[in-house]
Image (tube, rainbow, N blue to C red; front, top):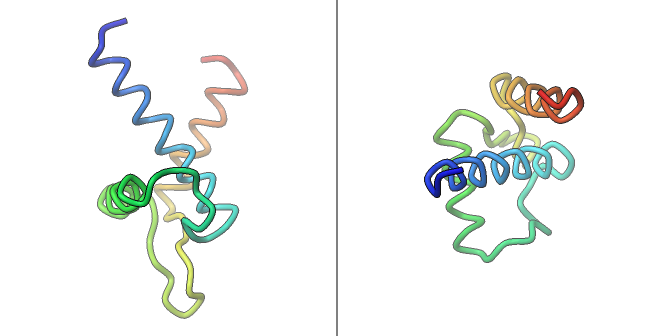
Length: 81
């Protein structure tokens, strides 16, 4: 596997970890990464349309696209495809 491909897969895996954490907690509190990395991940997830801030609820939530992306990842893990 090329170094570029390995980095892409690592970023994709991290985005799924972020989505799972947001789905469970609604925030980045308790996310195990340095603050700068957490902020970068948050901005990337918002920028990609995977999560959105729900002001009335006071938490982040997965968008429809975020739910779809996470479901695809879970399916891939479950089926090995």
